[in-house]
Length: 226
Length: 85
Image (spheres, rainbow over the protein chains, first blue to last red):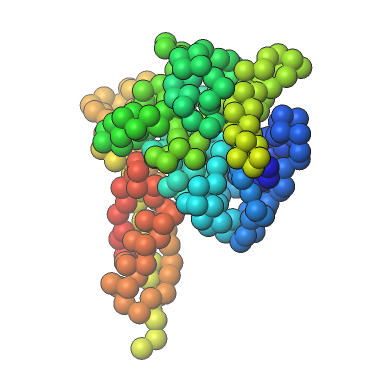
């Protein structure tokens, strides 16, 4: 199983992501830089959180046009699994690999706290170790996490089962439409989410609710390789 | 024929129907400064771009392409291109 973490100037959660994959998958991920035009052979590509390029223009907008994103797009088109967390989610929407967009939080403040999520679609390789409807804890840290899509796109996302996670009822922290915290692409091999599962994987973090996301996808990849 | 220099102003605004919490906050601040009669404020972005192109039409086409590919996120934003000099 080969995972690759892509690093951009201004990433700050890349090391947390590397640690989570290493601890849970048992093997350190490969690293790629934003100027790379090719990626090493990968079963899983991860775009981590942070503030790439200072989030100038729009969150994730400059990173989404980086040379490496052509390689990420080509891999995603071939079915390689792609995970984007926080700024990585913003990059994936800006790159057109996921539907919708992430706007300024409705309350205008940066939100850094623990939220509670509902696992919505658990028939996916990223979420199969959660139970449908299960309520889990997860940290968030973002200024632009307010998920928006036009009515037609939103209906498609809902009807196709592309909602991976919602903020639990009554707890939406940022104004996201339909309480959406994470979405899949139509094919189900790309997941973007604002909360940080990599920051809740062991008792030292105060909980392990994020761990099963990595166990799900890394487990699927191991089974496929066997 | 040699390319000419153009000065352009690109305006990017949120589409109708997209909530603009920053515009709402500005609206509230204007009200607190006792500016009456303001029915709404929408925040946008302005880019002043100097570029060379073979014609005004070619410059406008290039700027439109820039908007589609980078300057605007057409999921949430509209854009307008104006050659100002």
